[in-house]
Image 1 (cartoon, rainbow, N blue to C red):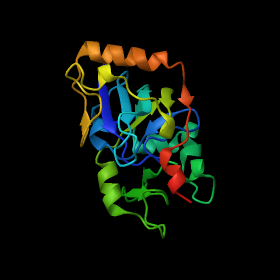
Image 2: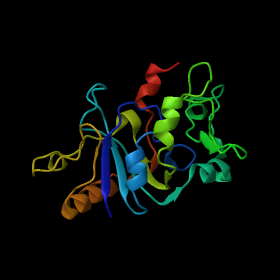
Image 3: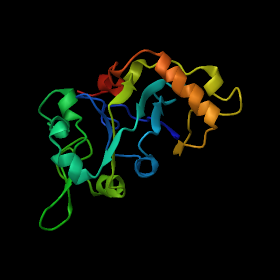
Length: 203
């Protein structure tokens, strides 16, 4: 079991998407989506620019993985298909990729990763689809902008800092991982707990 940690630079409830009973990471972070295995933990921490450095955004234990086409076609995740005319929860849906059945090219739904006029954003398509894999969890806590401060014992006081800089971290000692997961479990919370921080900045 590994722990993968990264800084959530923009928290719109899109990557990850914590709604409808599952936390899914289907866009951004292609390296983590490629490397994380079932049973691993993926955690996101707050950013300095949002004045949330050293605070939790989410923690998810990977319980399932699938391809984009599988994700798109699974009825459990139809509600995660974006609807920009709906609520914010609907607008930031992350079930946005599937292949054209004839041409085999990637289709990108009108979404947070498209251009404002609805046209496909080829840069985002290239980055997101370089790893054809979605991480799924039904064992997660998503705090958004109200996450707890991470205890000092996980912030470098013993030589290991959970909070990543650029990219991500996944080389943590076993005892560190065990202690951190115990701390997460001790929060006594599950699922969607708090609102995405950046919703306050969006219409």
